[in-house]
Image (cartoon, rainbow, N blue to C red; front, side):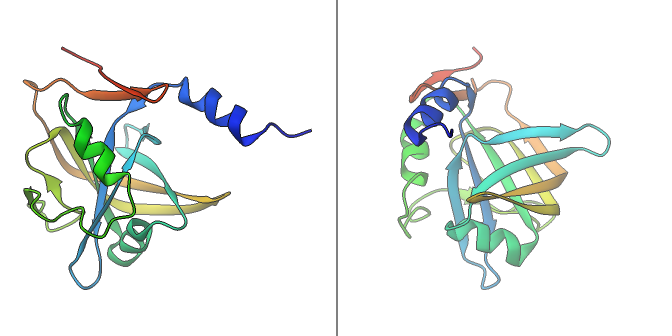
Length: 162
């Protein structure tokens, strides 16, 4: 017996997670990104993060091409950004302020809406059902302590810190 997709989604929606936008650059230098809550730390030594990316995502292709990605942890008040990056639109970066990482690795750092970011180099790509788990070693990052972190559970956004 297998659980229904609706029941599985309802169960997983009960697990609070960070509201993030994972970004990467294509080989042609085009930014790609998508909203994701399937992000977590893996290891302290070395510092590793994993992200679970849908096989049909254009961002997965950019991660494969560049061998790196950036996790933008959104700040409170960035709910609209999360919703925009959850679409399949090709215009996600039009009019959006972003900056490249100092190292030249990863994808765009969303300048106006993140509470923290981590720039990662891919160490492993693991097939897992309809997703690919990208494990990345964190090479650089930053935290904006004055911004509350946005989280997501039960299909609602909330501030995870003051």
